[in-house]
Image (cartoon, rainbow, N blue to C red; front, side, top):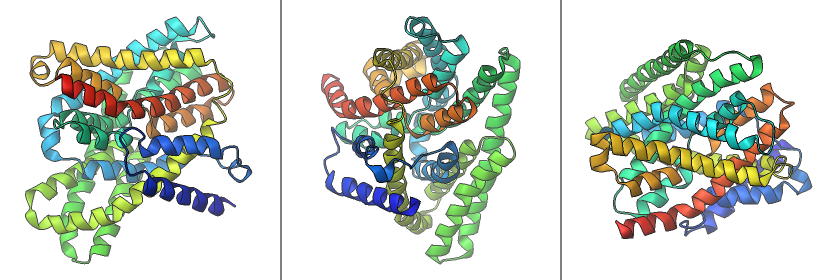
Length: 396
């Protein structure tokens, strides 16, 4: 039965991608999530579920590799401090501000512990720009905002997993927070993942010269994308950062040699088919899965947490751009607002949430609350990106 369901989901994704030619106000992922919610009431789809293992082991390595190898090295060099700062320290400050805000406001509605509030903030911290980057680039002539949003998402995926893992251990076992152990764990997991990614990326850049057959070169890229991820996870470091680093290193190698363009064309021919296929399935499944959580939560609290997530992110961004001279010269308050709004919650947040559900299956309220915020973020922020960007661009 599962094969029939997947084929039907692929057909639905194909139809949506084919007919949705104007994606300014209604990006494809939004349509897919809404369609998935509708499909959840169709009997044939009621038994289908998505798990953390499916997202991490099947979907995530491919999506990370596609995003990283296609990301411009020049854009990374121009915005490296902004991307690096917001993807690491900025994310931690955002989690702290959002977690404390949820704790203060959430207890007016339900009983929330401080660690539980911080855990919600940690799940909502990674961003998923897949539905908005093209819109940002099409709606303004200045691409630095889109570059920062895209680059930050590659880095904060790895950071968010470390933050989530530490907070989850504290939540499940009532452990006290230790700054020293957190920093040590963060550096080990992050630097270890980057090291593995460098090795895999370097090996791929050299190995592609041993054959001129495009199909074998594409096979090699699949091995690198998934191999770096799995090895990182096996060794206890960040598989996310391993795959991202290998993809970025490959992109860097592309920029050094003009003859590598043929290889890039081969990869594009394959991965540009894989990407919409994966996105169709994963966003439809998110919509179908969300139906289990959307109807038994306090939507007033959901809306408040959603607003707090935007405000917390904007505070960190706006403060950073005002305090750091190099950022102040390049990014306006309007840029901070656009980067804030484009920080949509998506695939990684769902994966972390499903990890929480697997470990704390009895805490249905916390899971339902967070899942509802993720869906609200996906829909409202995606729809609002184009008009907000156009308005701010005109004012600027």
